[in-house]
Figure 1 (cartoon, helix red, strand yellow):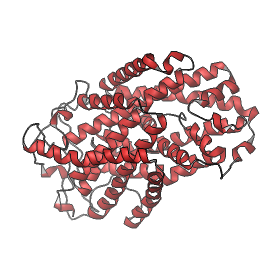
Figure 2 (cartoon, rainbow, N blue to C red; figure 1 turned 60 degrees about the horizontal axis):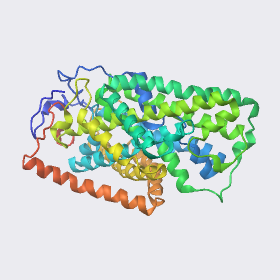
Figure 3 (tube, rainbow, N blue to C red; figure 1 turned 45 degrees about the vertical axis):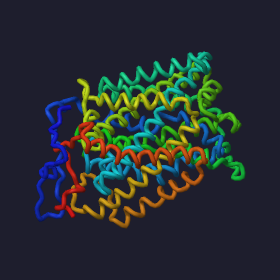
Figure 4 (cartoon, rainbow, N blue to C red; figure 1 turned 180 degrees about the vertical axis):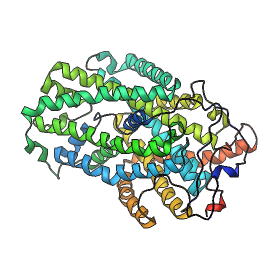
Amino acid sequence: MKLRHTPNTRASSAMGQHDSAEYVTIGEVPTPPADNFKKVSVLPLIFLIFYEVSGGPFGVEDSVQAAGPFLALLGFLVFPFIWSIPEALITAEMGTMFPENGGYVVWVASALGPYWGFQQGWMKWLSGVIDNALYPVLFLDYLKSAIPALGGGWPRIFAVLALTLVLTYMNYRGLTIVGWVAVLLGVFSILPFVVMGFVSIPKLKPSRWLVVNMHHVDWNLYLNTLFWNLNYWDSISTLAGEVENPKKTLPKALFYALILVVIGYFFPLLVGTGALPLDRELWTDGYFSDIAKLLGGVWLRWWIQAAAAMSNMGMFVAEMSSDSFQLLGMAERGMLPEFFSKRSRYGTPLIGILFSASGVLLLSWLSFQEIVAAENFLYCFGMILEFIAFIRLRMKYPAASRPYKIPVGTVGSILMCIPPTILICVVLAISSLKVAVISLVAVVIGLVMQPGLKYVEKRRWLKFSTSANLPDLHNDSSLR
């Protein structure tokens, strides 16, 4: 994308006009000449959010192993009110307030300054890359029962490499392609569970849903499984600049995606726990394919396995899109070298995609539970900064235009953030020492990296520039 760059300066007109009225308008980000790429519409955006957050019930099996059917079902009903809904609402408000690539990085930078904006970008990008390292692994885990050679050794290594390269190329070819691929993969991944629900009806016993043993609960696994499966609503904000009419499209897509995600988890768990006798040890990753075979036969098992594989592909391309466009948005804000803002002929951030793919390959050797715990730890730090930024912007810039505004005042905003913050503290407290140490080292790297990049900019070893087309609340005194 050809940006109108003005090193270390910003155009004051980017904030739009204001008068004596209560609200002023932060103007839509002007479209540069090279930004004529097709925008993402509502339906693909819904499924991109679906894959950013969920991708289907694959991976929720551990909740039953950790806590039994009742707590697993209850968790996926209650947890969205504690975490998913507040995060989705904040994303809708802030994403429409700043309809540009960079998303939560821009929110934090506008509220707390560019240093903390960079820290947010580093922690969220790293947690996203860690998250993405899961999907090639899960893809192969679902296929290894049919192709045993993929269980380990060189065949598995080559398969991870090949899969990563193919999906990375798909991201390179354009976000609209990724969006419609997400729609097709989503429909394919959801349908077999609808079929499984119908064939399970004669075998359902509601009493099985009420089984609970509070003395035999692995709270660490339980909470990490819920948290991992119901977070990342804010990830779509880093694609806001690629969305068609984001001020209307983003809130609508978040609403429908929230419904789709919750039903997509609860219904399969309801079927699986109600139709078969409970054996908690069997409830591990991939167990839904075994349930499908017991309820419907081999054909349904194959369909579930194929759906799981396709779902992991969908989650990979959606997450990589978010991660790479985040780097592009940070470069447009002058936080990263200018070459990160360069686009391919398909409108995609080529350097960001390459960096994200490299991170995935480097981290793919970690185990599933280590990856989930490490990404949750980093994600928690980033969410704390988001909550602070959300409240601070409400207090500091009450006159700024918010096309979608959560219907609560400052006190309501603070109260809304308290339950998820408590949950964050619990998740951090129960993390293992190994995960905590690795995550804290990653945080320290970010704290040092930002001054290092500023030194590089000062010495002019690399070119940094800030797009004059972007709004800037942090340095605009007219809204104070």
